[in-house]
Image (cartoon, rainbow, N blue to C red; front, side, top):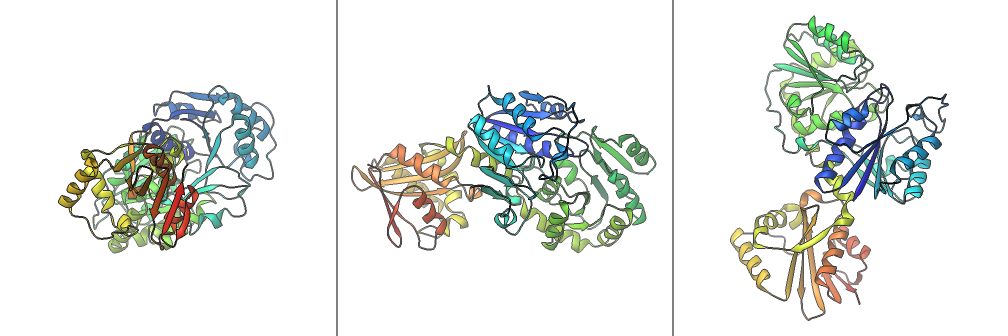
Length: 498
């Protein structure tokens, strides 16, 4: 499949949108998708950031060279620096020859008119990466990896048409390094502090944090991470040079190791929040933008972070003075934050987008361990007809019998070579079979069930398919109904394919 990603960076926008779009692009590429980026030079060389991560297919839109009047219907329209109609036309021109299956937009500067215009012109689906419900939007898929009690309610007044939402930190768009990255090893004492206030940090907030550390009495080692896009880089270097034990790291390819090597992280409440959570490091979030005033307090209420409501020396210092000596609180923050994010969010989103390419292959004996782990997972057993724990030797013997039985067809579903689920058909006659299926438990809620069921049906090719579904298993009931099955009893479903 061909995926296009439209994203910008600037002093106003920062580089976080590019960072999270790159994380999704890497996950999509790992699953076999082709990627083209579309970006506009708005004062930060976003194309260089993208190319530096190995994505060479980049369409650069023209630099804004005419007066521009922001659209009052879009609070962040000034970030675009061009009228919406011009933006749609130039994006379509950049992608017309590419014919993408999906276009991913990561910007607050455009609304439903962008989604509808690009979709109609290119005949593609639209995915929107967002976390600010402040304008009408009409994507097929909305990805919001920030925490919210109910994302459907969050966007209720802004969605136009039918939109599927992948919401919450479980879908955090982190780079591939984070899934297997070393986690923070808790220490009772704060030996060192890490500071990352965003890729641009136009407000020079990193210097305010250094001042706050001094006011709070911390004299240990400090590492500040920044990028070459920081307009205050010269002043930041001077401030760091004047503070003993303080170092600057510039343009790190990823921040996983940086987050793990310090006992406390201080950072802006943007996309890097979820990276810190994944590593499980105690964090003081500093609110530096209005949209962060919702996420930071919500995470603090869950006990995942501490937060400073204002990016001032006094506010940050007060929070640091309370947090630095409180090892019990820091330990609790580390443990709670790690439970929110596992580093697989970008892969989940990529699989959801590529679900239409799911195929099945015959299972083999080599799949035994994978199938055992998935089937024996508590989440799978909870919705299975046989909910007891599996025994390994019995599982292997069962698999051998199934593979040897011509009346039973067992398949593994895959997307881009990645196994995602298992489906089995037990034939009672030449034309009728009972179906059962389960997914990798890490992929529940991604929406792969229908694709797995339909691909399995096509491969096994029964004329009539029966299914037994627990009355309490509402998601599975919805799955079979969506795929054309009729409920004939409280726990029985049937489909006549021909």
